[in-house]
Amino acid sequence: MLRLEHQVVQRQEQRLILTQQQILGLNLLQMNNIELEEYLSAEVEQNPLLELVPPDDGMPLSVAKAEEDSNDASFAEAVEANILSRNGEILSRSSEGDFGDQFTDSYGAADDRYREGRDLSVNPELFGAWEYRMDSVTGEESLQAHLLSQLRATTSDPEDLLAAETVILALDDDGYFRGDLLALASEVGFAPERLQRMLALVKTFEPSGVGAADLRECLLLQIDAEFPGDARLRTLVASHLEDLGNRKIPLIARALHITEKEAESLADRVSMLEPRPGRRFSTGPSMAVTPEVIIQEVPDERRAQGGPRFEVVPASDRQFHVRLNNEYAHYLDKSADKTVRSFLEDKRRAAEALLKNLTRREQTLVKAAEVIAETQEEFLEKGEMYLKPLRLKDIAERVGAHESTMSRAVSGKFIQTPQGVIEMKRFFSTGLATSGGEEQSSRAVQAQIRQMIEAEDTRKPLSDQAIADRLRDNGLEIARRTVAKYREEMDIPTSGRRRHFGK
Image (cartoon, rainbow, N blue to C red; front, side):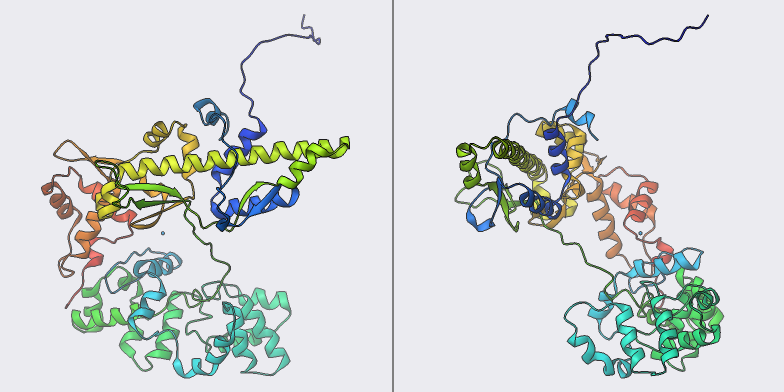
């Protein structure tokens, strides 16, 4: 017979319970410099025993000495990527939406075209009338604001203004109108014909190509504005966009009854157009990157014979540091009011815990950077091709922390080095065996592959197998499929798509 009853049972078991200080330590370790400053600012506001210190005050990040490091294994265990470009970097897909994304990614940001010269996505005759407006804007102007300013100078009809504003606000960040015009008309109560007319008006605005429904229409709008009457260029985009994306230059040449050199020239003109006309406008605040630590060369006068060439120092570009407020700490000893005293005692314990964890955070990052500086000395001196393999597990063992703790420590953090400001996780990579029995970092191998491709003859680009053969001649054991994998990770197209004709 089944009996249900309550019983009091005593049982012994081992469990690891994280303290508030340990949880705080992990949270601080995971924050980058910007997040940390926001957090500290909020803490100072609610804790009178903390005060802000300007960075030029000479104070360290924190004045409390860290107690025994709790970043051991058990502690950490308990908590827890177009169409065509001048250099031939093209990636394309069958769907036109993805195809547009590939167009932009293949040859880089629009800034590359601006550096080359004239921006062919802008009609200077139309744009000149609005240049003074853009020059008077104190901050970055949004695409919608830019188009609305043109609209108000184009029409004064109240109904047309409202209808056109509705269309403009429905554009996405790339400047495309990808919505359903009939559904939008029904939603806002305008006649579809009026919205269609206003959309056609918006398509005449700057930047050229805005208001298009897809990539093909966007490029055609720009061709009509920048190359009016160029029938071959228009036919190329209208009827051979997919072939262009796949670099089928001979096929395009035969279809247009022109030479491969002429087809290549047409393709180069398309590459100067802007597939995302809205992207040069502001879409929100950009995130700043600030280094946590600095790896710098030790001056000759301080370098010991046989000593390390590089040293690590904490970054000093914080807006502020924090420390204990001595006035309130003194008042704590003098106060006779039990309630005030109890409140201040709690705040002092919280302040001391924060300062100790800030010290521990800094120590962990500095130790990790010291291991990187010691391991990657050749990289710091000569560049990416000299990067050595380094695993997160290796650095955790040398720092004396658990691997999961180190993963938190390096996530989103940056180091200032002689090779520039670099994300810490870029230093961690697997190794490939060389003929000498050593290992070479996969990132260093990628740098070698990129260098080979940049130096290749674009009329006869290197195949993956040819690259693998060259690397093996240099003593690196690597398979063709590994070369293909690394090439794809660097967004470098296949040899067929890198090939140029008539050059």
